[in-house]
Image 1 (cartoon, rainbow, N blue to C red):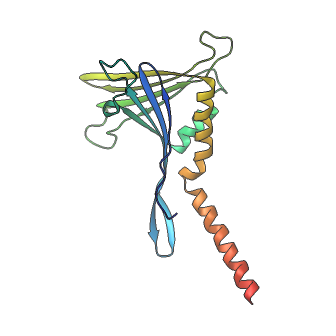
Image 2 (tube, one colour; image 1 turned 90 degrees about the vertical axis):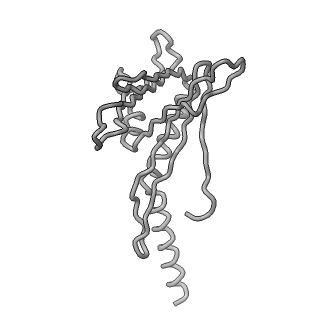
Image 3 (tube, one colour; image 1 turned 120 degrees about the vertical axis):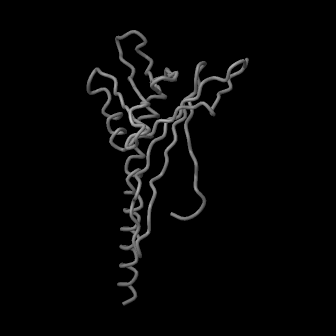
Length: 185
């Protein structure tokens, strides 16, 4: 698509940290008259701690932890609730390099559980474990409404992550061009 790039996000603010949810689009490459997805989009979750020594809620986004959910992981998030277990994802930021295994990003999401303690709260845990270095961990409680926003964004964004929306637009554009060329004949 042409025109300026649009940025959109949804942020949840809590006393200890803030969570920002932001879709990042796929990357395309042009091959003659065709475009192909060369990197699928992701759903980015960023967690920033509260800035130290502040009386109001300010967050230190320079120390954020970022976790990118793939389309399959978004599907796993949507399937949450079919079991009684939280969903857990682990990413090695240095996978495929000699430094693989030195650090591990962990994202755990649990949904609200009626009848349980804190039944009206979902939890998002984001952590970074590094060997030999202090780890970072943030836990964010989210309301059922905020949890539903996260699920809805994931659900609505999945086809765009794969570039299907642009492929469908291209099919519609070519069908319209075909109809116009037939009507001129």
